[in-house]
Every structure is written in structure tokens, then in C-alpha cells.
Image (cartoon, rainbow, N blue to C red; front, side, top):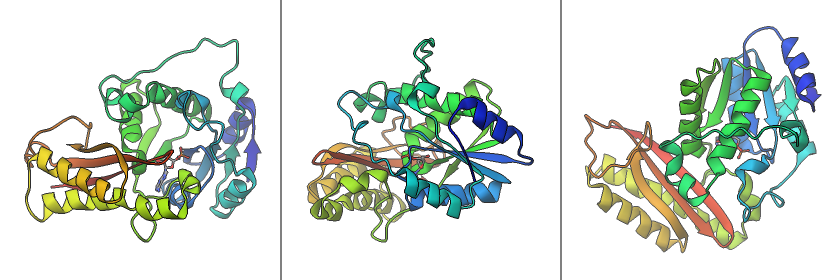
Length: 283
Ligand code: AMP
């Protein structure tokens, strides 16, 4: 498994590969969720390239960029074991040289709701780094987790809008045995917080059952029940919503013939740790 630290190194290494190439962008602190993306990528392509880059432009000034977990040696071992062909490990100056024009990318609409409201500038930072990584590596496909559904929909929209040649692939969320979606930020949780964190999944399951089993189609009623469930676990709610699964548009009434794909999304804080999760439903 090769390691490349510069743009020219990674381009040379990727250029020497034959066959279909998949890129899996990550911020490191790799867990089973990341590894499942790599395994799926391996099934879809001949070579998997993983990028590990904690991207400063997607963190707000009050957010955890400096504290974000960094576990490079363990990450490299995991990549090797997962059959990854090469890892791109750029430094901040390689991706954001000081003398470079700061090109901003904004995807209107999808970036202006939910995480985009709570984390101003976050999605512009995500688009910027993903566009750069795709232009640097030129993969045939790039794999992203549905765990970050709004990010996935945004990247799909950006790639479509800018006629990028890379195909964007969304892959399912890997969960702990109690349903909690795996996340690099779980290392911050105390034992008590870890137990309460399952409330995000429980809230999603309440909403899912209301729609699928009870036929409740009034969005306000479902969102209220999801928020109540988050409260049971003493989670500080940012949002608990039902949206159109394709573009995250607002809706008031579920009409299966008009919006057959739904997304239930929750975000909540436990102390200083903020967690997000979602499920997709097809009616
Ligand atoms: P991150 O390192 O948090 O930027 O995540 C890198 C990629 O892994 C993103 O596409 C995430 O959506 C994806 N990912 C994160 N957690 C999970 C999970 N539990 N299951 C599947 N994919 C995940």
C-alpha cells in the first residue's frame, strides 16, 4: 500500500494504476463504518484510494478541529488490512497553499437547511475539499456514507451541476449493536453519554414505525414524537425532522405518490458532543 503526501505524488501513483479507481474520502480516526465503505468500494472498483485529511475549512471557529481525534498509525494498519491500494495524506498547506485564491463553492437550497443553518460555512468547506480531492485523484467513483445524508445529497448535486466525471456513490450506515451509528466522535462520550446516545436511533425508529406501521402521514405529528423520544434520553435537540429523501425539501404531509422517498433526520447534543443520524424510507 503506497502513501502519498503531495498532489504530484498521488497523481503519479494513481496514474500508474490500471482499472477502475474508487476514492473514499475520510478525516481519519477510522472505525468500522469507514471500513465498510472501503469494502464496498473494493467490490465496485479494482483499486481503492483512501484520503485522510482533517479539513479545517469545514469546522467552525467554535468547533473541534484542534481536538478532532487523529490516529494515523492505526488508520494506516486498518487501510492495509482492508486491501486499500494507496492512501493520500496531504498536509493543510498542500490542500490550501497560502498564495492561492480561495474559491468558494455553495450549493444553494440543500446547503441552506439543517446542518447548513447550525454550522454556517460547513458545507462550503466540504464542497471545496471534495471538489479538490476529486480533481486531484480523478477517481471513477467516490464513496460517501449515508450517515452524513445532507453532505451526500450536496456532493451529488455539486458533481451533477459541475459535470464532474466521477460517479458519486452513497453507501449504508454501519451501526453498533444497539443501533447507534458509528462515528469518530464517540471517543468523546462518557459511559453515561454513550448509553443515552442510542436515543437518536430510538427517535428515528419511532418515526419510521409511525409512518410504516401506523400510516401516520402528518409530518408535524411525527416530528413531535421523534423530539419527545430524544427528550426521554435527555438529549439536547437541534432538529428531528421528516424531509423528502432525494433533496431534503420540507414537507407537511407525506403523500407517497408524490414523495415516495423520505428521510428522517435527527441531530442532538450530549454535553459538548454533537451527533447526527438519519434513516431513509421508501414507501
Ligand atoms: P468522516 O471521516 O467522518 O468525514 O467520514 C468519512 C466517510 O465515512 C463519510 O462519507 C461518512 O459519511 C462515512 N461514514 C461515517 N460514519 C459512517 C458509518 N457509521 N457508516 C458508514 N459510513 C460512515
